[in-house]
Length: 449
Image 1 (tube, rainbow, N blue to C red):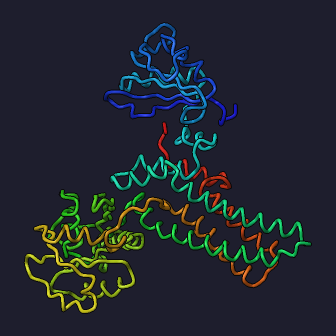
Image 2: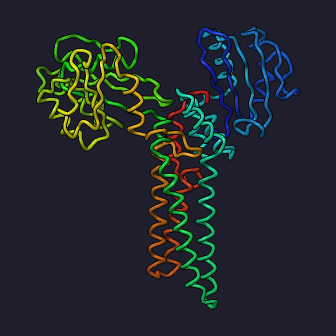
Image 3: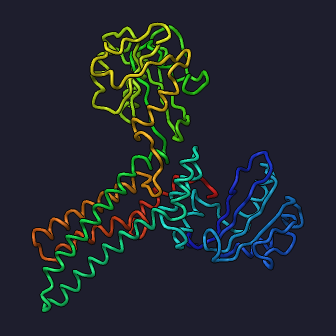
């Protein structure tokens, strides 16, 4: 049986002790199965909830509601049926066993959305936005994902693609009818057209940092030497005692990450082991993980104390090339001498992890340091590294085409660069994407979506 054409099923909500669990069925046998499994006619009243029972050979499995959605006006553009069951783990398991016995297949992660993509209901950027919307933990992140679900990014990319295609059409006309001696005009069209396309691509690329952070979170690594108050600051950020705090140096042996919201942005804050020559194997591994977390972070939060130690100064010197802030901790005990920080003072803020003094200002400064002061989500944004990489390759191909046109390269050779740009843009929407890329996109989804 062709996996793309068989009928699939899966819980679309958690089959946990609770109110309702929705089981979704999609495919050519959805109508047949819902008519067989449900005690009352459902398919003669499409899109209308019907009360009844799920039965198996006369045995009642659940008292529930059922609804049928005929193709193509469904999420997958296939016939779709839903059973709205009681969220009893045992009851739901019985219904799923019934569907399996009818020859239906349990859906793979993201397979319903994948079918929506394969059947042309949504493009790949909208499919990715579905998962981004599901996992969004801030209102701004949810709104940005919803905008992409409604096609904002797809429309922008398709607009660029149409303009590249128009340039290719002009080159084809020039090549097919050389007697019109239109090569010079074609080269000028390419030069002007690619200049405008490059500017628009760069403007869209400028949204990538904010878009990716809204979708995935802003990674902040708290670092510093032992006993400067990193774990206390971490707990203060979270508002709970998450990390163990003692006066003993080297207490933190692992990298602990938690999520908090600040300024409408989800921050993934990681507490790391103190940077020093490790005294034990466990601490050595903790230091290695601390360094790895620092490499992956969008911002380093370097914690020092008002009485600067050699380790503080060394770490500040090592991190000058990174996006960072310096938290001068324990200011409730000893007021910091900001002048003593020298050129690092511009990155420094006094804070007391113990009392909370300066904490909200520090959170706000973290977001502003990475995204800029007064950051607001753009109406259209690149949301992940796959999209960013494809758009960068499209932009680079357009730059190659522009330079070739300026140098007077024959139009048919310039068409190679323009075709590459069109292909890269198509990867964002899925029009020209490879199968392995599609697999990577949908493997991130949960079962039932």
